Length: 260
Image (cartoon, rainbow, N blue to C red; front, side, top):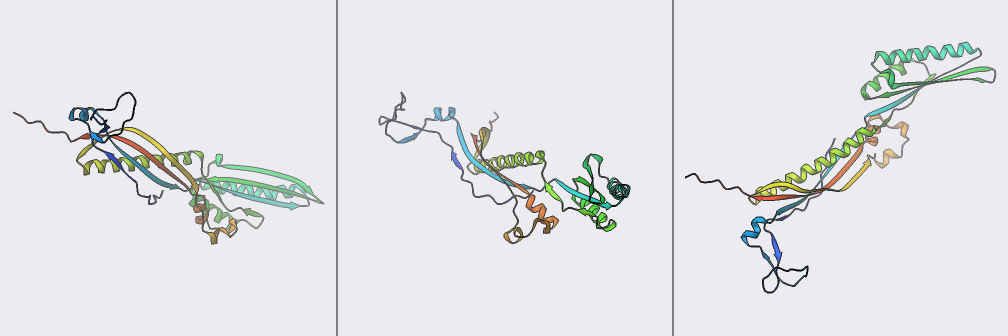
């Protein structure tokens, strides 16, 4: 996953609590608002009031597809029904055996067959749909079968996609990284002004975005089937962004007790 540069974050810090006071330097009461200057609280009140630091953090992560699907089509047209079936089944057995030798599990293979009469002949067609989790293995198998089988076997370009679990994990990681970035900023601010960062008082995810990676305009004008495997992976890559707002408690530096 790639982290992209995020826009600068504004950090607001209030290290000394303030309160509105009336003209007589008395605290406003009864819910009324009186004009007056803002003055710091007394030392006793400042000790009991909560001091806070407010920060926002952002992050942007990207994740490539974790699945690919390839469809292999085998067909044969013969005058005799048995010959058409035999031709197709022979190549299906070869494909299935090759997949098993390469470690492809049976649950990742789906096979369908269609048999029909075409004019004075019999036509049989079969599809083998394979789901891959290892893209390198997928390319090796496809290249091998293209070399070994004749033109009656058609292998479709791979279609890349994400499982629901991988997308949800990307969203969650984006939020966690944004929270970590906000915490680091708050920590640095407190260190700079000689304070200690306390516990979080509020954590709020304010904004989330999600989009699929796009290839450039020149490539997008080309047919999808003409894209390379790497271009297809890039096009199917999902990006997730998160922005969070966090309020932390601020504590003063602890003073060491003098021993008598």
